[in-house]
Length: 429
Image 1: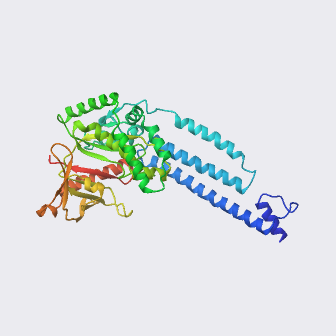
Image 2: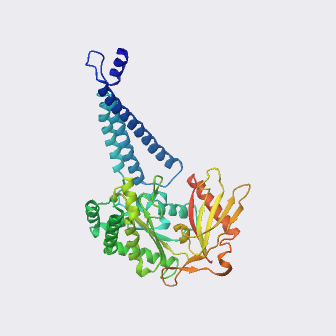
Image 3: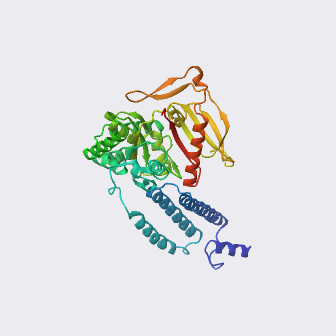
């Protein structure tokens, strides 16, 4: 028994029997405390390993990510390491205190590197899509950076357009002093109930859509829109899509939480831009940021503006199954009209499955009864049409287009080094 007590004394950081022996209750309390610290140490270590693995995977697979992704992961990794050191000192008092000093020195060096480089004030307010690629993710978000990469490096048929950059977003917010007011509203709100979150969301979004467009930004947009008119035709309608910084990073997905504006007339271009920016404050997006610990001001909203495609059919193609890792066939989902209902997930779709080898072959066809489709109004906006007759049951895509889409999906997978999905549309030309 004495030997066991000496061993316990050493475990608890004491030198041996010359010190007063702890009572059984004290031993139990200390053991629980050390055991809890040990579990926290393991959890912090696992979290640190996961973060480093995510960063290494992003680099190895060629994913599009910017400094927002790196800063977020570096910050989270710093927290994990600090927790490891803190719990080590709980397990062995006075033995690892020197690690705090080394940690702070290393953290300062990391912060110095992360704060260097270009800032949001260095780039343009608006940039043509044909001038960007994945290196622009810090200014236009991963979504539009990906589209630029596909258009300009892979030669895929991406509709022409331009992007409101993160600098445009900050100029718009600064011009209207929106961020301080939004911060005040968020800090003064009690968000433990969803109805309060809905009320706060509505208040913030109204402030944004009623805000004034800065003259400098309006002039830059008008110049880029005129350039797009010269490429397509005068008065071309456009679609506006969110491309928030960090929106599609490997550990944060805002899919379906932000707004898209389809078939927008040039007279309503600025209103549509503000609607997309305001969708940063949907209840779903705000709740997601709160749960992920993302600061509101760290998520800048870039917005892509592209010529509207009036599609005969559209949908989403996946380079391999999202449900079965062993299934490497290409999956193409399709509906009549715009792909809006596929992206929103509110309609039945045709599904075509393509086998890769020995040659691309349509392996399965799963046809749905498609009772509706979305089409563009002649002037502006979209409408839902009810399908009648044989169109509802006919395939919304022919084999030629199915195989072409499968080939494009595989081209993207090869370029990025991992499974990919892409939204597509087939026009009547």
